[in-house]
Image (tube, rainbow, N blue to C red; front, side, top):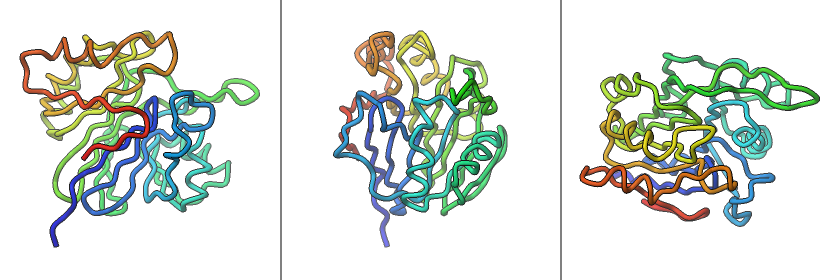
Amino acid sequence: MAMASLAITWLGHSAFSLRTPGNKTLLFDPWYTGNPSFPAKARPAAADLILVSHGHSDHITDAAAMAKQTGATVVGIWEVTSWLGSKGVQNLEPMNKGGTITVKGLRVTMTEAIHSSSFDENGIVYLGEPAGFVVKLENGQSVYFAGDTALFSDMKLIGELYKPDIAFLPIGDRFTMGPETAALAAKWLGVRQVVPMHWGTFPLLTGTPAQLKEHLAGTHIEVLELEPGQTAQ
């Protein structure tokens, strides 16, 4: 039976829902509660897998609720999954950078990210180091979700090792890469398409997809610019 194409829905900020070619629903960094760019009507009703890149509230706030609502398995670094376990989440797959697991028919590798990771819960709670993910889909296609990160030279190695087709890259600047460094990341990764994220949510995030397109002019790398709630496939 022929597989469907990958479908990508942006849920605002760095939250995404992916329907994989094997008809699995994969959520990245679910932050819906208090997210000013999240369209409530687009809240996922089901999920098979939730990937959490780090512990900041704008990435992890709804991870426990979604996991308990849907029964999805949550993948994250050890400290994140341990913390989610303390919140009553049962289906957990802890891992660390450089490791690869197969879960729900998807091959997930945890990669480096240059950022920080904590949650403000009656004081700052340390939640391990930030990370990114490479996910190999059922049809052999690979996607790279960078999480919140600065540009780092090992993105070249991620490109060499995993050959991602699509990269989800932050472009907002100040707390992550901006458009210029995100464009360089896309070139190092060798991807054919970039999905910009972590932009436009707050005035402090000044980077825009238009700027990213300018910095990628003359390349064959497409910028997939979505509106919150919009799906592309």
